Length: 163
Ligand SMILES: [Cu+2]
Image 1 (cartoon, rainbow, N blue to C red):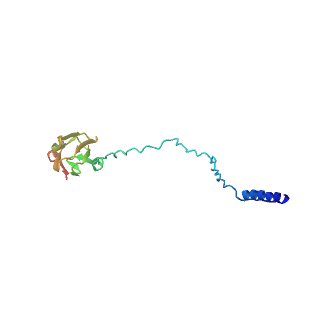
Image 2: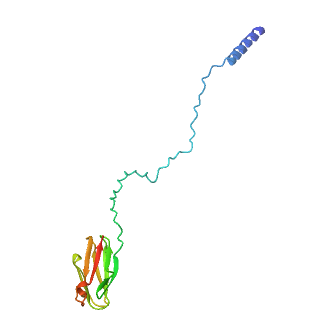
Image 3: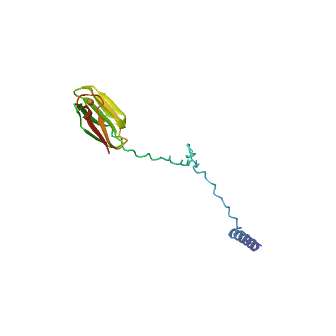
């Protein structure tokens, strides 16, 4: 009888051992990794909105200004009147020039007349008279004394040449 108990005990041990050596396959407990909260990504919101590209307006059309020759001022010429001549006797100017003749009689009253330019000035002695005109007409124009001044009055002539 004692021998039988030993067999049972052996069997029980075997069963226990076999059970121990044959473990039930346990389904692997999958531990899904818990997402660890990382640093919160804060997308920076632009404080100033991007400038909306404006359509470039058409560039101002600059009309070319006509190139005008610089006004070189007034062509000024001093003229002396005396018995019985003008000095210089010939005055040369360019067409289109603004001319200012500063005419002075140095002896007696004379006159300075250029009919083609509607010029007729009296020249009192010692008084400078400005005769201004624009030389619009080309040619030679006679300047003569228009105030009787003596024997040579009719021959007191000068000329203005406009080229
Ligand atoms: Cu005269």
